[in-house]
Length: 210
Image (cartoon, rainbow, N blue to C red; front, side, top):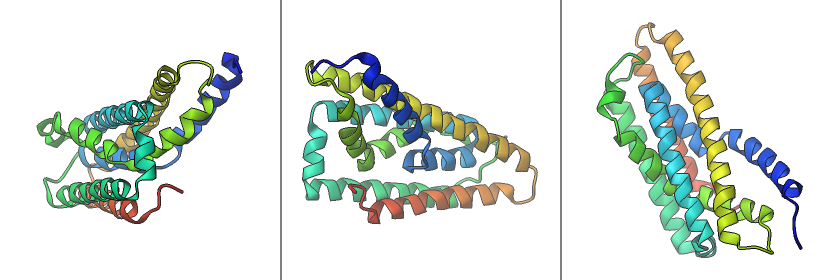
């Protein structure tokens, strides 16, 4: 059956936007990084998670995500590695250099946050399974699937990045308003680190395949 473009493109874009702005691991990760390091850290982390998202798109387009979805052992190993990595980042944030909107913390980590964001998203098996479950519903079966999958995946990653940058904007504004308060930098580090630790615990015990 031949699909007309607008028969599936409009509902796909609408669904992609709604799903992108729903609170999830990527949004919470970017929020934590922004609260800890400011706008530059948030933007760099967003770029990292976008790169990680594209890795998942390519893997799913090649069909490897289906293997992940059907292998309990591989699924569990990757899930727990990702969970431990988030807990590690959270603990390091709590006990590391205290953040401030005007501090040089984000400058000293230039490039590192990009890598961490990408690795965090690559280890997020929920993203892999999301692409595998969501995108095929909008693929035209009468033409080559992989190019369509990649194109639709790029759209999803784009809207996810827009949602993350929206979080960066509002988190930066909130942090700037409170930055002058006593002990605010300590509360930022404890709060953002705590978010990462809780996110890691949630990732470890949540059944993301449901």
